Length: 233
Image (cartoon, rainbow, N blue to C red):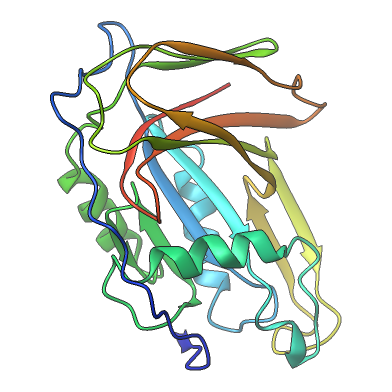
C-alpha cells in the first residue's frame, strides 16, 4: 500500500444525514457501491484490480474503477487517469480517517474503506453494510429519475458516472508495472455533477449510453459523505 504524504486535507468533512429518509420503493434495490481508486503506475494495485473484476460480475454490487493521477510521475501515465477522480478520493479521506490518499483503496458506500487486496475482507465489509436509506433512483433512456423521500439534513449531490461495461486490458510499457498487461473492469470515463437532491422528486435529461458503456446514478451526502442511493443501467 502506498501513501501520498504530500496530500494533506485541512478541511474536515461535514457530518450530514437524512431526516426521515424514505427507503427505496418495493421492487427496487440499491446496490452496494464499491469504488476502487487505482493506478497503472502502482505496483500494489494489480491484486485489487483483479478483485474488482470479480466483484463487477456479482449481483447487487456496483463496482467502479477510478484511475488517479498522482503516480504518473513514476514513469507511466495511467491512460484512464483524470484529476477529478483524484479529487474524489482526496475528498473522501477525512471522513474515512485517512490523512492522505493511497492506492489501492476501495471505498464501500462512501462509509468504509480498505486496500482491496483481500477479497474475503472486502466481502465481509460488503456484508456488514446496511441497505442504503435514500430515495429510489432510476436510469431509463435519456432520463435519470429520483423519487421523493424525507428531506435530507443538507442537499445531497447527484452524480452521473459513465463507465465501461466490460473488461479492458492495458499493456504497461514503463514504470513499476512495466511488461505487465493489467485487466480493468468497469473503468470510469466520466464523472458529472448533475445538481442537488433536496428530498423532492425530480428527473433530469442525460446523454444516452454509448456502445459498450454503462451509466450509474449516485445520490450522496456532500463533501465525500455516505452514498444514499444508487442505480445503474
